[in-house]
Image 1 (cartoon, one colour):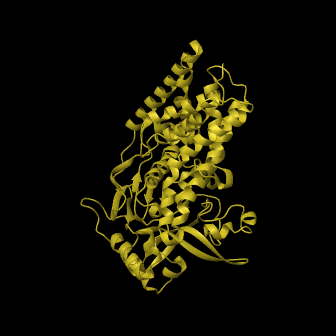
Image 2: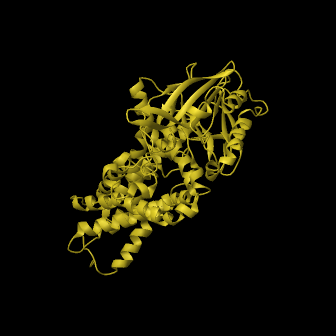
Image 3: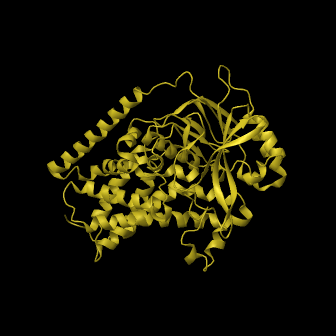
Length: 490
């Protein structure tokens, strides 16, 4: 294949690489511009035609630029977290977005260089390209605890026919297929083999769509005696948690919404869900017997009702106190609360809840820069916890809902599957951006993969009750900026 002079249009090619990444990212919800998948075709063309004395190096640069564009559009919302305290942290926002996008782009750069180094020829190289990029995405989901945000395989809106493929081949398998579908037009004009590859992948995609469509038509309705779930969304912005004068109002908001009468024709809720870090204090303190907070929380529950809430708790450690990001399951029994379940978050957010490579980064002042403090401690490996009465739940605290296979790992460790996935998150950090909407889509893929319904509770939205096929139940969604509750059957 003839290759053009790498110097001609060098900057135009770099701009096109960046645009290809932006285009592929636009296919993801909430944008949903599916023609954006053709960005993968542009990327493979750019890598195929990368020339110069060091074609591998040129291929890396093309992949890195495309990845930087992809992640810039996919993760720009992290800037919003720095505006919670704009005076102290606002200046860091553009640097954080740049660092995040360009750092994650290294994985795509590596994929480009690897693909170029392999002896891939003919129309079949589309599958090699898809495999290389998917391998890079798998690495992104695991290095330094991983950050599998917006995997290409999760481009399809959760609950759609195509998204059901995650139940067959998982999110990483869907990544191979999605990249190949987007890139295959590149080989259409390469004779019979090229057209055969296009037709074969089109048939594979159409077959998966048909299978998913059939799967959705066979979904069962909730049983008449299904437990009633209540999700509480207080619409409290993140900055409210840092104002001691608002502490009482925060508690009273949760209590008021928890005690709200059920919707017409609906039984009283069996389980109530509060989001991650609901009350801005240690659970050891505000749930201590005899405190006014414990009394009003207990009073908001009916006897036998269960409250599942996100909190942080303090526990003694060998060298001092340890802090955990925790899910607690509490049931009202008599005039008090009985602890049914404790789950400590296993997958912590790098640079947010802990500092990776702490021994190397702390001496150069990076720990102080990101203000992570001593961070949270890692909990035990995931496994379902019981709320009694046969109700097994798999907690997915915020970031944990991004990880394909997380729930299955817990089921294997415990020897039994959960009945419900519980995603408690604090998306208030990210305001009215695309972040919470993307998080809803990604978390819903965990329901599809395992065939287990999911409940999602956040302080400002988007909260929802999602069936085992990744679909939000009718009327079971609170968007950003809404205060209220969702009552829905499991």
